[in-house]
Image (tube, rainbow, N blue to C red; front, top):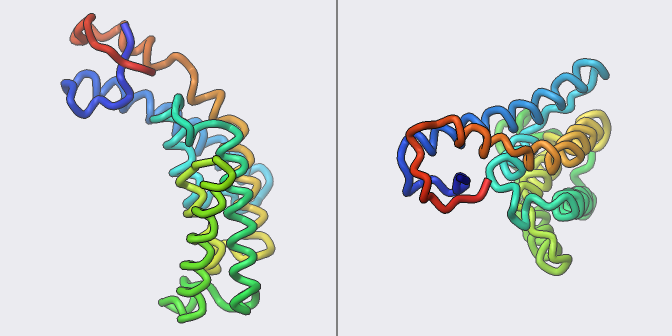
Length: 190
């Protein structure tokens, strides 16, 4: 018996089983990043880690969860984000968390950076939606060049390295087999 990753049309037991799997996989990935950051005394936990961990946990068999796509996607996002910062003269500009709202240049940098990221993801054949979050973190100044950007890159390196491995653990199948409430005829992927 297997469990479909899209359990929206299935009963609560299937959704709960998959939810527990997602909890364990994303918790492992985010926890690994957090522990590495604690050990290194570096800000590795950024908001792009969550969506990346989610893709590996909830959709391990999809194009977006491929190691290559995550690596290329976030690398392109880094380049586009940094390029947009430079093009709009924002490398020394305060982040939107400091100013309270984005400047017009930050809005333009975000729009151009994310647009270019999506364009290049398509051209490279490396679809990975969380990469757009990486571009936004950079263009908003939240992951400026220096420790915040290095932390973002190191955190992503941990998740991208472990994500494909942890995301493919047969945990959903094991959990599904222990649930007496699942129908044997369900056609599902882990």
